[in-house]
Image (cartoon, rainbow, N blue to C red; front, side):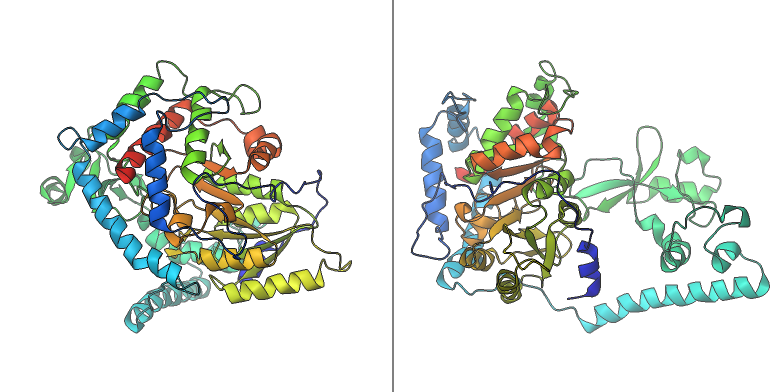
Length: 525
């Protein structure tokens, strides 16, 4: 394990202002599956899970029922009949394709996973020598040229970055200010990033579909600053105007700014709700504006909860097979504010070394002790668990109050999925709790889109905390935490993301509800 990874988690262990109760280990129940106490990790077959959900949905008149038992929606039967009618169903071709992919999904992973408990579900393709050498060579050229320019600037006392090449301060009268950038960061920003920053932070002028319109930018100072290219009439050179006006991959937006049509490989639009919004969600979302405001201007603990917030939480809880769910207005803050609420001083967090920055920030701010294990290496995880239980807390050697294992369903930067079955098996063996971040896997993994648990054949009841976001698959924003009622009620009262942050926009709630309904109809029938 690299020292950089360890340093990313290290923080001051300070006293927690509140005693964190052991609500993570409250009794768990699953709507869809039954636990088997005879096994270390109970596993529900994929097809049984799907058939039970379809039967339950077909017998119900609503997508979920609230605590009072009253139906929150009444259009489920009509949606089911519409989905089953080949002539009236607008998603017939999409559903056929999804069924084909689901069958392939099950054949490739689910059944094989049940047959072999030790199956490694991390498939990391080897990097070819040519790809590696060309990547490193590109950076080597930029770094070498950058150092050469700095040397020349110091020798001949000239150059655009003379002062910053000799000193990290831009001028002598600013030495009283704190240093903003370290030596390498200073060099990287001046000599590398400025040369290639036109590849980053690209403004767009269209919906994030398979293709996307990217605004063209120009720079008059060597990429130090970038400005959007204006109307074609502002281009001085006739050849420039011709290239932009008649090129195959160019066009103009309504105000005349120049755009480039590109293949989109940078958006989270997994199910297409962002670019197909007019067809799927527009009518319901626009209709919600006539009844509810864009913002509630309050937190959930005060006046920020509407009927749509309760409906979203009910649908998500039922979809995941959990007792309850709480929604927050930002995916990053869902991790960053929930983890410090669940664990504190005297607790141990064991985190995958490639976990997202939001998890790193939440773990560091919790005050708990932190250990990292090799990516998807359950043997290393077991070694750390054994050591943590045997050695206990530093200095006092007292046992840890609780141990929380944090993993992701899909690791966003690597594109790999979690070896969840073995992680859960090891965690249950040593009495640790499991926190699963499904920001990228919910809606995109499993035959019915239920995420990593369904894809790997793990009982949702064996995962203590399910976290996810609505931005990647459902065209909305915000995040959720699903678990037992005791856990969720505790988070509603004590989590900063729920108690103090502005609540999720009701309009976004309607977007989430509609996208979930469309997804459930496509997946189930």
